[in-house]
Image (cartoon, rainbow, N blue to C red):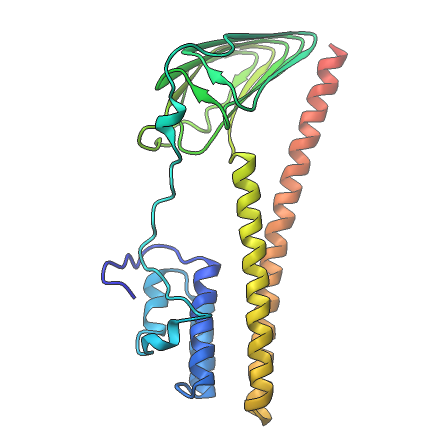
Amino acid sequence: MTDDAVPELRASDADRERVADILRDALAEGRLDMEEFGERLDATYKARTYGELAPITRDLPAAARTDSAPRVSMAKESAPSGSWAARVTGGEGSSDWAVAVMSGFQRKGRWTVPRRFNAFAFWGGGEIDLRDADFAAGEVEINCVAIMGGMQVIVPPGVEVVVRGIGIMGGFDHREEGVPGDPGAPRVIVTGFAFWGGVGVERKLPRAERERLKEERRQEKLERKRSRRELGESFRDDVRGAHGAHLGMLDDHHELMRERRRERREDREGRREERHQRREERERRRDREY
């Protein structure tokens, strides 16, 4: 482990899997017996922080942490904020306004947000998506007026959001306020008012980033399956009798628990996405009825 460890940081499932791989290698090399391996593996999957993970492999040599079991980093690196300097371009915006009267509008993809963007919706709706946009200035204002309609402002992670809108028998979404922005990231101020309508503010990853993370999780899952398969083949040759049966049952139990946790997370995300889609569909139907 590193000397600049931050033991109070929460450990991820991937961190626990790396420690478990180190223990399996140590067992295969004869550095741990079956009883000690079982105890340490149980402690690994119960660990919640780096401080609880660190002692589990502290007495194992560095050779046991190479190849299939990379060393667990005890200091979280900050996530890259992206090229904000390149996205704050200065100059003029590519679109200054949008109007929806008993209809809808969208501003999304690669476009330049002006210093002030005005949006108006009457018996209609609109979507202002800033995830892939450039910005004419370090601080931009999105002025939304929704009368018996609705608008949604979508910002990427790292952008600071300030909401100054007023709702009259309607509402403005303030949930994304208070989240600090990344260095160099623009500041988005949402103003205006909603009468019998609403203005929502939502923070989402860009689509390309979501796809990249999804592919990384898929590759990690495939790598874990491949490692477990190779380890199982090795154990079938080297581990005999009750010790081998006990180890297989222990691994199956923990794998089943991890799969169930992943399935529950995926189910929650799926239900959340379905609710969001149903809500959008209801809003579109209501807009068409108006």
